[in-house]
Length: 423
Image (tube, helix red, strand yellow):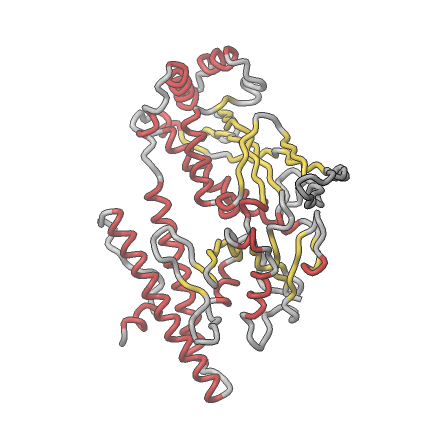
């Protein structure tokens, strides 16, 4: 039995758990690379069977499916190890607030979480004239916890990691844009300057919606002085926030949540107009074209203007990515390539691929692949302040921590994102 065959029969890739962090990452990356080599070998066999028999062997198809699933598992494991390595110990942040107010806020917040004593926080927030503080609205967490949560969200929320993030102090962010661009022209050095028309200006609004999580803890956990409450609270809320954000930034309808880029009106890219997102159709419902399926991806890439294309990224879910892994160019090279390093992105035709599970599967009329410069195309707004309300009554004997942050999002440049429609 070859090494490649051994890979596809395993449900996970064993790595000694007591290795150093760097050793674990190297081992996970090696496992991922070996899985992709096994995938290419098996897929080449499948393609050879199709060419010789005009069909494929069922055993080969099943083997390819198993290796493909193992490849996804290896990538998930690699991403998780990379994220865990990126998480700094919260103890390093404990010494962060050098000023007296920061240290006092941290101590008062720690007392509030562990024992429910809010006098210190109330005095601090009254001194800072914070609106909405108190038992009904909760209390602001220390800035080091908020900073850590936002930093981790940027790593595990795929669209946030790609988009522009704007911090705001109010509940609404507005920006003006010109759908046609400012009027301009060429003139000679001494020629008269004709008056240009005033540009038409429109306003985009990005309201910050409330996102919440409600982790629970036992009083025993809170009484244990060794437990790092900052690290516990950050870990409890960050995954929940990231999951909710990831869906909203893709498919959110803008009502009580951010507006996702798939929720905007679309138009054929050849007839693109401001305020709508251009689409490229595959020409085949629910599938890629049977002949030269990768050609439509080139149409999508070059449907984006060069100024956006240089910083563009593909966005799709893992099942669509699994389909594209089988595509080759005219020279027989695979168009999809695994990441070259831990924490890196897979590439498709030289462009990075971001995996967003909120993207739809391939179906009739589905918008399953996005391509664009999301840094210019999508805006995430964060209302500064992470607020926590301690609730020891609703779920005795557990203590609930109703934690909220306000976040919004929407498309800010409609020409920077293009969509592939299976229709």
